[in-house]
Length: 116
Image 1 (cartoon, one colour):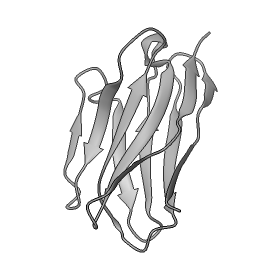
Image 2 (cartoon, one colour; image 1 turned 90 degrees about the horizontal axis):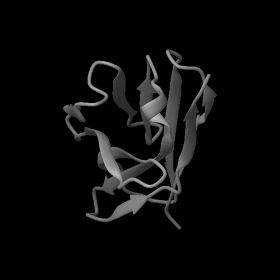
Image 3 (tube, helix red, strand yellow; image 1 turned 180 degrees about the vertical axis):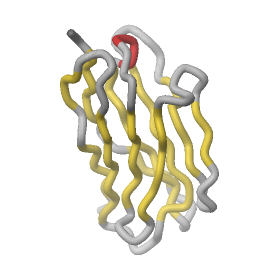
């Protein structure tokens, strides 16, 4: 059974940092591309950051310059480094990964709360 498990969420003050991890298990295939999404209460899900198999990255304008997506292929883990966090970054953050067999999986998410 393939699983994506996010970790690293929590409570942080404005201006603080968090590093989210998304670890894949249960698949013999490696990750091709991966994304981080977030959904705040009462809002639609938003694509935050993406990384391709070649390491190219894209970011939502709202996080550009503050968030960094990266990957460790050997560990089948994708990261989201979040710096200079703002109140409006509060959301459930989920990862999604497209494996090399063409199947996409989703994690259940981790809650990030930015509050003073």
